[in-house]
Image (tube, rainbow, N blue to C red):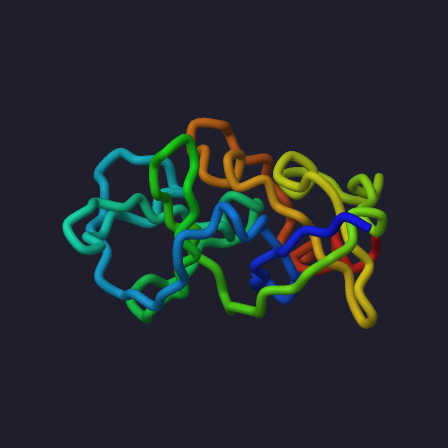
Length: 159
C-alpha cells in the first residue's frame, strides 16, 4: 500500500502536514528584517548560511492574527519552485508516515483561507491533520480571506 511522509506542525492548535520531500529543514530563528510595503503575511527576511529567505507568517495566510516576531519563531523551510521559503508556525511536530488510502478531500466545513491552502485531510487516531499545499501557503500575492477571531482553531476541528 503506497504511503507518504509528512512533516507536521501546529498553527493555532490545528495540526498541519507538508510532504516531507518539500522540507529542507526546521529551525528556530528570531532576527527578521522587515520588508517595507510587503504584504502582511511576509514576516520578514533572514539570512540562512548566506541565502536570503522569505519568512511567511502562516497564521496570516490562514486568516488569523499575525504572530509576535519579537520572540523566536519556528520555521519550516520548504522548497517551492526551486526557492527556499520559511513558513512561520507555532509548534513543530514529528514526521509521520500515512497511507495514501487514508487521504480524504478537504471537508466542506473548511472555509476561507483554510480551504484555499489545504489539499486534503488525514484522520489520525486522536485528531485531524490538514495536508498543506506549500506552494499556495508561500504565495503572498494572493489576498487572504478574512476570518473572525472566534473561528480560530474551530474550523478544522469541526471537520
